[in-house]
Image (cartoon, rainbow, N blue to C red; front, side, top):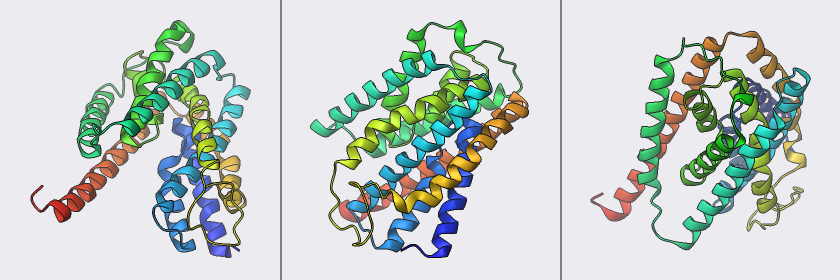
Amino acid sequence: MLDIYTIILLFLCGCLGGFFAGLLGIGGGMVFIPVLSYFFIKMGVTDPDLTKAFIANSFFAIIFSGISASIKQYKNGQFFPREVLATSFGAIASSLFVSWLISIGHWYNKLIFSVFFISVLIFLNIRLFIQRNKETILKVNTFTLGKFIVIGVLTGAFAALSGLGGGFIMVMLFVQWLEIDIKEATAVSTGTIPLISIPLVLYYMVQQPLNFPPGIFHIGFIMVFALLPLIAGVLLVSPLGVNTANRIKPQTLKKVFIVFSALIIIKMLIEIKAIHDVMYYFIGYF
């Protein structure tokens, strides 16, 4: 049974994550994961279930934020189903393939890839900052579906190798490579993110946790009813994020995007420090 403070926290988390999902086309996982981590720790969930639990339930919430925001995009005449499906196809295929390569080999090193992706994000963020006032007038339907598949492939590989959602890198590629208007870029990303998340949620639904607390209904790692306050916040506020994105100038939207990209870089730097500390502890000289 959730106490009133936890219900309020989950609801506010859903509101905040839903707003930025609708505003930036990023899904909202950056907001969901810290609160879900706190939520599951408070419930007594420990590793190896803890990490899987907050990732799985974050993806579950992202499905709702993406669908809710996409419905609003559709009503506003900014939904692009062909481009969304093409991007999703590339992203799902590459994320599953890269995840499989990681699972069968010993070549993957999270520290090395984290450093690489931080470098890529810093480069893209600086480039976006320099071009923040540049007008991008190209439309989504200007390009062939093949280019959206390629961006989907790059996004899926990035997500699988970095452990991050693909929304940020997807929008970055749309805006900086194809030079699509950022509002249309976020609209495609908004529709793509839930489609990418569905296979991952289904995977976690058929897995069985080892030490989930008794008395909490769950399907695999997904705590459906416990997440109702968070999902309610997502459904309520994500359309507001879409409307806000439509009202503000593209240059302002780019600046907000730059700030959130910087937060992701800081998050990855903190994770690298944690990885380094663990390796130093066990190896002694790293």
